View 1 (cartoon, each protein chain N blue to C red):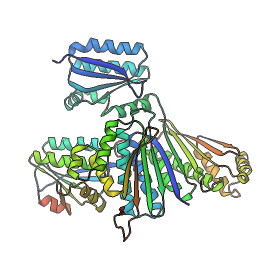
View 2 (view 1 turned 135 degrees about the horizontal axis):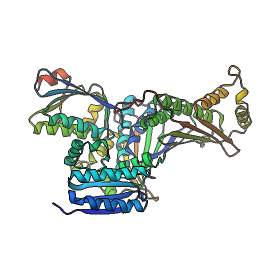
View 3 (view 1 turned 120 degrees about the vertical axis):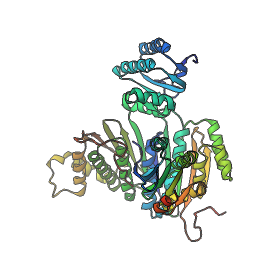
View 4 (view 1 turned 90 degrees about the vertical axis):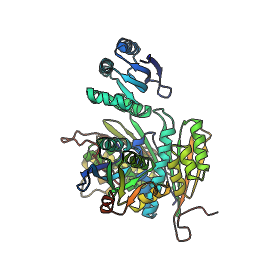
Length: 117
Length: 153
Length: 278
């Protein structure tokens, strides 16, 4: 069994082809494959505007960040966007260390992230 | 009394969450800060991932984690058996690099090792006489004089 | 269509496992050949097989059917066939055929080997800990072992019982062993699909040897209200375990526990089952 991570996926009423995805738990090498499959399927179905709510994401490692960067890249290629909100201090530090703060769209809260869609 | 722990586990990814939480829990029990413990959790995770993914494919292969707890520092050593020489060389090269773009270009796991380097006070890669590859990290307690817990010599 | 090559070898690091590497297209004409190769392996008693599909672009439905049959025959003999490195197209085809519900699929060799040993050979995983005899380490150690058994799919009730067992036997070893600065407590944990074996060893404190032996010998006659804390601890461990063995000598004390997994009436499952404790 992998580390505990679950996704809560909801529609974003204000925008077509948009989903809000809450990440709950720890994102690491043991669960990236499942998350990759889930979110890639969503994007392939046409939901290319995604707001990722990280308020309940306690922990992420380099493998986890790797797929977040991948989602960001794929969403842009498909004419959409992958925005992140509510990043906790510890997770932000890791994003900063790998130099991804300029590569990812990071917002203070989900309201601002949704408004920017 | 100085505390030390030696732990061996099968070289499988599924063990890593429990192991990283164990080491960070030990840090918190020894009055290191929550921030220190989180950073240590990341360090252990990344190094153990490296050991599991580049170590031997044998079912009997065990990864060994040594934890030594001093008053102001935690010393972590992770070693694995096997591992191809080219992977060991690449890892050595990554640890020697300082330029972020170069690191990402050279090595798929470069990102992880970059994080470890940044969060640790000091890091060394050794190939042991018994053929095991070891990564040793020391992380000093952060304080006013040394807010990042970095080696300053 | 690319001509098919099949490379069969014993896995270099785990030689009781056969690695079959397919290269080329698996069209309908290849069914007989695949059947023959599996029959040869069967005759040699090679029942643990990993099939590598990294160099396969196309697979026909008759071949999928044939592989299902080969897998069935392996399972009957206590073996299995695990497929690795399937391309996206092949995975989609499997989903359309419902074959993804039948086959075990892994992303890489290591995971497949691990699955074969765990599921089909019931080979236990071994975790060893040796640590300074400090009571402050025990909460972290018991949480660590309980997180491992939780990862392994043990039911919550068992996870809690195992945590209690680990706590009690480690505390006992620290409090009642001969523990100088350079001594250490060793905890060996062997876990398989059905049970966990825990073994704690420590240096023997001569003064406590007789007391411990008496406690174990008189366990059935003891009175919970009058017992020492140690007596209650041992009784608790005995009640929670499937078996308990203690060996005491001047060289060391060893406490060995076996705990079988109990069947849950409402088994939990799925990706979100279990929360690892920090």
